[in-house]
Amino acid sequence: MFRTSDGVGRHVAHEVAALIRERNAAGKATVLGLPTGSTPVGVYRELIRLHREEGLDFSNVVTFNLDEYWPMKPDSLHSYNRWMRENFFNHVNVPEANIHIPRGDIGRIEVEEFCRQYEQAIVDAGGIDIQMLGIGRTGHIGFNEPGSSKSSRTRIINLDPVTRRDAASDFFGEENVPQRAITMGVGTILSARKVFVMALGEHKAKVIYKSLEGPETPEIVASFLQSHENVEFVLDAASAAQLT
Ligand code: F6R
Image 1 (cartoon, rainbow, N blue to C red):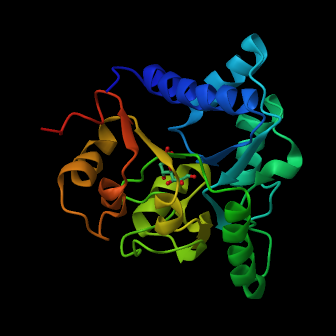
Image 2 (image 1 turned 90 degrees about the horizontal axis):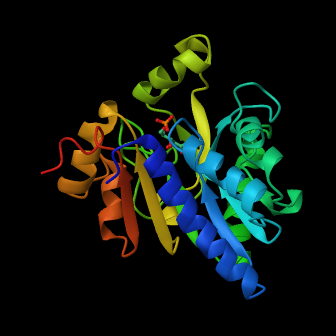
């Protein structure tokens, strides 16, 4: 547990950087699963600093983003694609060909095939080495809302009303928040070799308590992480406040 949000971001960034350096030295790729949102901003900021000041080299890093609203144009102000570029990719040297983000700009008929290909691309890359996650107030990881099965894979889902309400301020009103999104599944996330779950702020305290100390249940999807053998919850004091 870290007292500050800076501590959370730096810890995860340094773990990621250590793996990238180790893999680079061995001439091997590093595969990262990436979240958007307010929680990981400090991780990206620190990774950018390590790139600029310490020469951390991302040229052999492959990335898979967790989710994207659907429908959503990649250059829209609200897209996770644009968010990732502005907050991370524009500032480091991940090759464009190595960046994978679910596509919000495809038609409904194409979605299933796209999701199948997304799963296959993760397998072809050798699987995810480090999956970073934030957690929603519904207990979602990625956009796996309550009711998602533990074995679910990349698919289109309906967003929970709480999630849409939480996103409302980014969209100038809840009515503008898309109803749906494409997300990696719970099974996809659980297949990663290492998972970091980050949470910041007292509004996450209840869901962190339920995820860690409650039963494993599809009602709190993050509770499924209890059965992952290599998961680390990286919390600030406020989000950890209800843990016993
Ligand atoms: C975003 C994602 C979501 C967020 C979660 C927390 O790509 O997958 O699960 O991590 O909604 O969002 P913030 O960090 O904004 O509180």
